[in-house]
Image 1: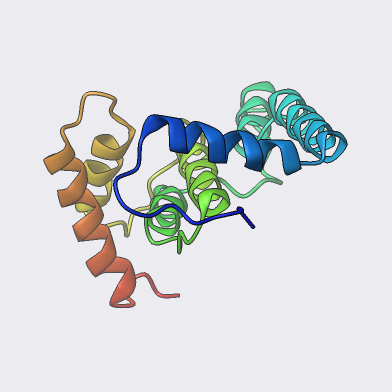
Image 2: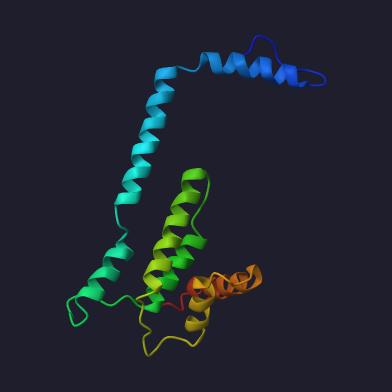
Length: 156
């Protein structure tokens, strides 16, 4: 704990003094190890292709293979919905939601519509994958998806 709590008007000098005291208590070895772990994890994330990238490359290399289930527009919209409704309580949760949304964007490139897909699916997908969509358009798409998937119209 700090020697004395800050009371009254706080000056820059007070903040600097308390910051130096706090920083002096940090175990430098632990801090360096934590920074190294983060750097290694970031390098691994850059080198490891996502599931979407692997599926896309397989689909391009083997277009006539029928062993793989095709990625459907419904699957991609479900990923966007999962990312949008992901419970974000901390920074790691926001990163996880961003990863899910990125995977959905990558899979959208190879997604195929099904005959029984509602017509809104194509519109929602085009809005969510467009880099030029306005926030209002994105909100409209997410609201429609929330109504659709939350109400169980998805069949899941």
